[in-house]
Image (cartoon, rainbow, N blue to C red; front, side, top):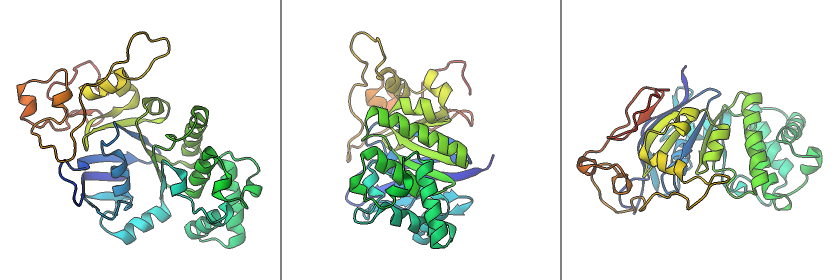
Length: 319
């Protein structure tokens, strides 16, 4: 299956920030209708990866490496990236306020997007805006058109932000439930899953919540210190992790009825300016050997299941 989005050897640097890079040599792809989750601790490079792919990095950031959407290169060309966002890439931020203009009515913003993306007249755009508000499960969508963002709850604003994406080929979602109540989180996840199904939309979602991965993702890429250390089908990776970092993340998930203290991963990720050799996870790894601190492991394995580790868990899984 050909890739809808293809990223190869992507790096992200920030002026004035010493090594390690925020994103360092990441490669991934997303097929049409596929749902790929990127997981990892805060600071692992997940969000910067999404921002780089859409040309939304901060002014002091720079990205290098091919990023192709529908076969067209979009990295390094602001016009191409903007065109891709307009015709087929949607982006939902952690805080929906980043997607909404506070002093403009909801309806005006939705109509503007509908007119620009579909090339329709205003009357058709109004109808499309009301229809999309209903699709994201907001009650009385016609009346919502006259309201301002500050008049809505956090969950409602996130739904409006999703509606603003109209009908993208792929939706980039940067931890879209992190600031919401648990019950609202579940509603937003169910909404994303339904939209993927109804619109034939692919999804690239960043999260630190492995519960979201289990509920929503087809495949998972695990990031640590700017690199992908494991990738695989969600069910296989969550049940049989091969990288010790992935295993540590899973062991730290609270479980209903669990007893005793939660497992933790000792130590901390590399800090900006911290120089190192070999595996970046080695200082925290319970299975490290001498050469782990010298030789840098590369992501290797079957196309559907890769791991960057000198001593990966070797279960029977190859899925």
